[in-house]
Structure formats: C-alpha cells, structure tokens
Length: 329
Image 1 (cartoon, rainbow, N blue to C red):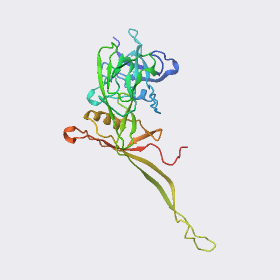
Image 2 (spheres, helix red, strand yellow; image 1 turned 90 degrees about the horizontal axis):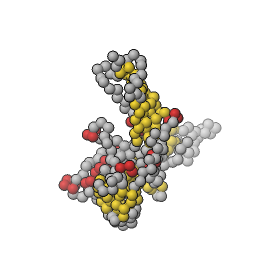
Image 3 (spheres, helix red, strand yellow; image 1 turned 30 degrees about the vertical axis):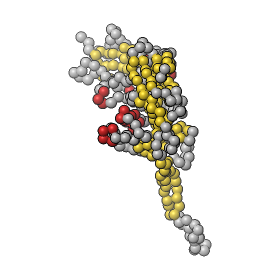
Image 4 (cartoon, rainbow, N blue to C red; image 1 turned 120 degrees about the vertical axis):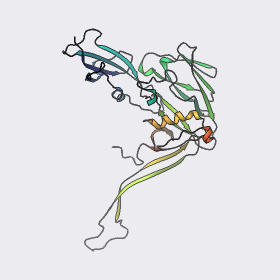
C-alpha cells in the first residue's frame, strides 16, 4: 500500500477578493518530505507571507491585509500523486499580527475590536480612531450613535477604522448579529493645558494601527556622531603654518534626535498597550504636522499597578528613525 512521502505547496499572495489570484500571484513553491515515523507534513509560511505586508502609515489608517491561498499536492512513496482529496486548497486572510507563547500554536486573534485594552485616552476636543475587524463586527455604538459596519469582501476593507467623535465616553462593539456585545471600551478625555500632547501610532499585536497619546513632559535632545583626522597644515614653501587652520578635521558628522515622552496617569489596563508598543516593529509620531518614524530606545518595561505604584505614568525614550542631516542617497 502506497504511503505519503512528499508534499508540494504553492503559495499565492494577493489583494482584492478571496480566490481572485492568478499565476502572477504565485510567490513561493515549497516541497517537504515526511519525517520518518510521522503521519503529517507541516509547513510554516507565516514569515514568508509577512514579506508581502508592507506597513506604511502617513496618518491615513488604511487596511493592510492580504489573501493567502495555498495549494498542497500530495505524492506517495512511489512518486504517484494521490487522486483522492488532492490537491488541497486553503485560503487565509493575513494580517501583520502575532500571538504570545502562552497562546500556543496558531493563536486566534481578535475578531472584533483590534485592540487589547479596554480604555482609550484622547485629548479633550480631539477625535480618535478605533480599529475593527470588519467581518466580525455588525455595529458599534458610541454613546448613543450607532454605526453599521459592512464588509465588501475586499482585502482593503477587512480592517476598518471607526472615527471616535471628540469627547465621546463609551464604545460598544457588537457581533454580526447586532445583538451580542463583544467589547466595551471606555474613552477617557484628558485635559492637558500645560504640555503639548504627542500622538504615537504603532502596529499592535492584531496587525492594526493603534494610537497612544503622550500627554505629559517631553524632553528633546540629540546625539552627535563624527570622526576626525589629523591634517598636515605646514606650508612647504615657508615651512610655517597658520594658527587659524585646523589640525584636527571633522568628517562623517551626523546626529539623531531623541525624545523622552511621558504618558501621564493611566489605569493598569494600559500596560497591554505599552507592552505592544515596545514589541512593535513599526512606530510613528505626529510631530510638527508631519508623521515621522521613531524607534523606542527604552528596552526595559515594568508592569505598573495601582497597588505598587499608586499613580501610573510610563516614561518612554524614542529616537527618530533617520539622521538629522539629510544623507538619503
């Protein structure tokens, strides 16, 4: 009796509607042989798909998702392709998210509101954005205003960003049946008359853009890097040198601007937001009317609680992800 020996896997990655792929969307062809004593062949292709999820943000909150269709062809130990139930075709929607170790293999992400926290902080008089997984949400109610969420089936509609009107207080997210409450989010409007509030946007664990406002004290600094070489400043004709000429000459001069930001007082629930910010690969700040990329240089994070810390404030150091002097070539 023939037994399974080899699996060939074709991976199509594309946008648009599910199943609308063509030959040009074939990105990878993988082949694996079964391990002796095993009954299954396992492929891990998440990192391959991630190469086709380019997270770009210019304060525009677009849906970044792709369809992945895999076609597996199974071959027996005589080199003959199985005819029963073969090939095996599967289609997935891919977001640039992740799970934690404790959630075990292939964890299921949120299928409603694409944020972990139950609290959103906004400056008074400022509207916000709530990321939603459109296929799993029927409606949201912000205070007394109801908004129906529709999904066209296109990948650019799968993540939707509902506008939170300024000075709202509560958001309720409902399942597609419009009656099952999935999540309640409290909106906390912060009055900060003294310091300038900065909006940090990052890609959270659900693969969506999430905002975090830093309300309190900001310290800006920059760190200069350079090199020097020693010049020969002697005039060979007179065998003298001018004292206004530099013997040490600088070159390769540049700098990185840094920001030390403070969140202001927050509830314990915000720990999850700070954690996901620290783990994010893509982070931006709204700074002087521009959206600029930043990198957190703080590498340690302590989970703060009201019991241990009373009032909870998080201080985070960032560095702009570009040089002060423009040397883009």
